Image (cartoon, rainbow, N blue to C red; front, top):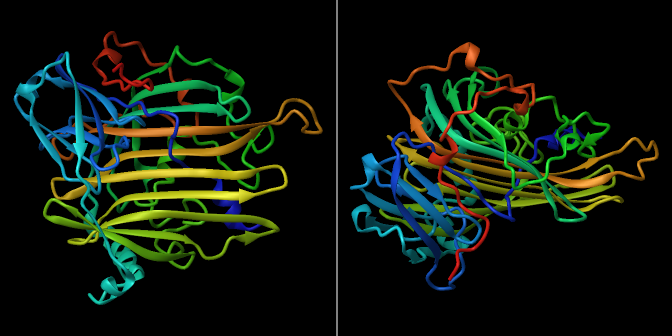
Length: 421
């Protein structure tokens, strides 16, 4: 079996059912902005749009319906709120004008200009040239200095046969990253501020077992005993550009370009900046009589070749399963002239066997993992103490964290249910 397939293991994906994310707030929230974000031309909702305080890391993201509720901290309630989404003009409004009893509607204006290959190559650029330059400049565009990421993490499981969701684990986390020139898995520290099962989901403790390759497994894949958050973070191909991530990205520095063909779809205006939207698909995907194919998009700033977004979808054709193996989406954003993770969302197909030796009772599931970054500290922060660091090779739920009263009340929840009209 090819090592590419074996290493598919840490696959990732986009959550299509709902998005829930939040932000830790230091001050008590007294002012809430509630609204919908949509494409002003098509009226389609815009998921993963960012709603933030201007020049601050405080903010939230929209759910799959383009909806959000943002509890603005008291110390920022006189600032401006900015709504942004790649490919659209930004929207700004004053926080002091917000009325908490109103559901606002925000129609975003597209800023995408479709170009053909001739227009791109006429500027002396090819899609492969742009991607090569972007990968080469990762060391320049992303921080080599230590920084903290404050975020909200969740994972849950979907039964493929019933579409039922189980085991929603939520955690408030702090990640101390030693910089892009150091190994993330080995050197980064993770601290849990709070963790819980969401009571709105059924709990199935058997499905929370680690991937052992026998009872809980991804066919043709090998997953180590890292916890779900560590598996998710390790497969960020930007942060981990020089190590193996997942098929067929493999090692981004060496394998991503040879494994794919590229096409420049458009140039996007983003205020005074321009973004290359480049699509790609696998060039070779037939291994051991199992057929694989993958495609995605990479978004690169024209001014400095920073990779600010990346999506990837891998599908397969197996005798026992045909369909999506992984869905993956991430976005990075600028903060103090460097680029830091904004969100990372993934899903992967897996199977779970009961005690039946013939495998007749094997069931099919999807594992979802999501990480949303609420705040970034780049200087004058207190390092995570060794005794506060969780083990990456143990389940997150094995950590016993004292309950902090009001902790979850200070997070911005985005419901998976549409607002009432």
